[in-house]
Length: 154
DNA sequence: GCCAACGTTGGC
DNA sequence: GCCAACGTTGGC
Image (cartoon, rainbow, N blue to C red):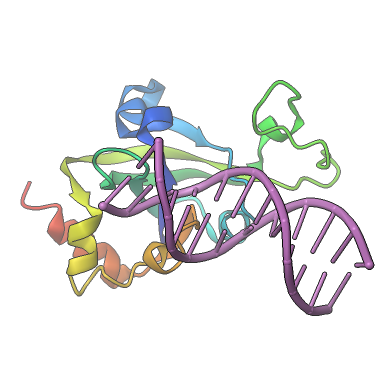
């Protein structure tokens, strides 16, 4: 089992949206960055666990955890001309972009702020801090444990 | 809303 | 295939 961190803007889709979704499950789509795509397509497997990171908002940081319930499959939005994720250069024969399905595991009592994550030895080396744009990033087991500890007793 | 960082595009 | 220009992301 592997660990990951997925980024999203909570104004668009945050952990509250996931909590309110049917079966607390959603398609994680719209990934349009090649390195993130490669991680998603080749690395993310069913059963992997994921940190839900809120970006570009008031409370930047990790909001909770999710589990991958369906491994990578072609992102349908890339074929939809009405979608903002439409990609005319992609085809069903040779899909360019992928998505997964995720289910909420836990919404933390409070978002763990990025400032704290950067200050703590166990989490300061998260890949996301080295590569700001990576919206699907690997997390080590040690980093995962450190984040759970920072989430506090519960 | 600003601005730095970085990914992507396109001309050569 | 290089690299400058451009666009987007994301923290503050």
